[in-house]
Image (cartoon, rainbow, N blue to C red; front, side, top):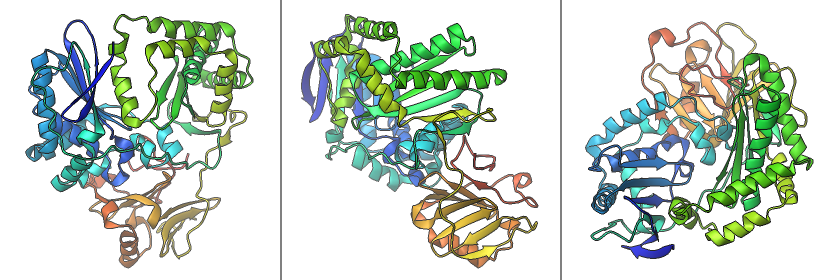
Length: 501
């Protein structure tokens, strides 16, 4: 039976569980609350708070997502008291002597994590929910005062929820957190002019995301989509090894459904065709009733877990933090049992209107019904034009409000007031990243442009959005090739090879 209480003013959820106690302290703050210029601040606070946790790696962990930060562990009651007490103490007085060390740990972590997800950046831009697709560039400029302000604003008792899987609140547990306010999730930006849309990405697989209203039927739709993709692409077509789909609530009444199918290079056209045919079939309502029944039955069986209330505690805590409804098990069971084929079809139709598709680069044909994502800025900069030193057709345009690079048939524009961050290297290179994800990389040595004009670019972007970058390898600095203009960022961008795709 689920119980609710408070610990030092923090709402607490308790459900019985056998064996060692599990507990978590969740805060309503994540990457989507940051700006690109400070991206990484929440993750850094999480690492600093865990530094003096006092437990082995096998007992505890921390997690920073788009909209929440979560400290959790499994252990004895005394472990829970000690761990959560230390975390709260650290959040109130971050161990700044570890600041540079933890920054390096985060940089190392990013290098081993693999490619960053491209879909969030394409859909939302270099802001809000798109920031998980961006490197944590803000680490370079974050100082002790920045972190203290961030912790004081977000890591407060009013912005937290405690959950405990065990008999009761362990004796002696204190959550000494500062006063604050419950923070709503940020609004979702829209940077694409038209959906459904597609763009070419790295890899040979097909990846799709859609935003739908959060509902029990939408979670069933995600499961049905996975079954249909697996049947068509793996069992019948033999084109893919992996075909999967996930359903993730965003915290604002909407959820993201993400689907993926892998492919060998010689199979990528077949996988793309099969993938989009499944989406179209579901949009038309041509559902296999057996798939709907199977997904619904499996979800109902999962609710029969003997400790179902305990397993749902983290999700319950997040719902409470974000102000979303949380159904008791009996009500959820009733909703699942009542999901119809027609409801799943309605979700499929809704998803079809918001789908963003990442297709293998070089596929033979554009997917039917999908508009190509923009590869050029809508407006050109008004200002002084500068030629490249190699006499190519491109022109650098620096104006009072924006900077741009134009080429025959395309243009890239970043307006200063809409610049999320300006990366600055000691050798003079600059990279301006717009809120829409459009990126302009400028190598001054390659343009016939005076220093005063470059200084005007720096002055046009607010100093708070300047990010100092470490020195580059001299052998990697371009000297005699055209400057590169870029569209939405891809992967790490560490090699300065930016482009519109």
